[in-house]
Length: 238
Image (cartoon, rainbow, N blue to C red; front, top):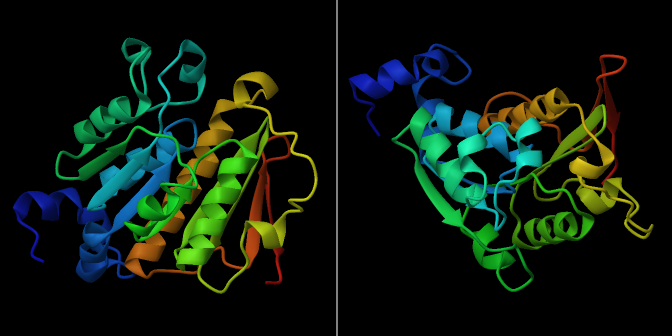
């Protein structure tokens, strides 16, 4: 593909990087990314991927914006209360980059539609907050041979990893036989900037994957603690 003058100017920051350059930006512009969850993590992921010029971005979220979301879900504003999060996300992303194709899926991800949705994209970003959906996303990506970028946050901490076909996945890292004590951020609490840190790192992993640049968080998990301001990395066997 050939970038016109407006696109060349818009993406100059990437094109100036030797690790990305024009071929990498072209790959980003051809990319198809599915974001499951348009909330706290989904906000920075969606905004940065739109700004980066990812060709097609799918948003899966059936929920509406509520007042308690606004502390951390920066894609949405007070006027969006009551609107579908997917529609509010589309408007926010389009304001940044009207050239990005945004596909809305205002339905819950289920066992019936997961294969169709995940199979239609190059890579999936898990921005959800409950174990059942995380396992569904993970298991479908493994079954379909699709890459996955996982992220989660709670209180002052967060964690993320990337799965590629044949590498460690969610079930390799976490004991899924234990009862889940997942609580939504609105109940358990979360420092809003922690959500931004982890979501931004998820978007970084996606862009590196699409552009073929750098090392991905494969067979390792990264954690962030805002109290001590420390990142840690743990290597995981398949």
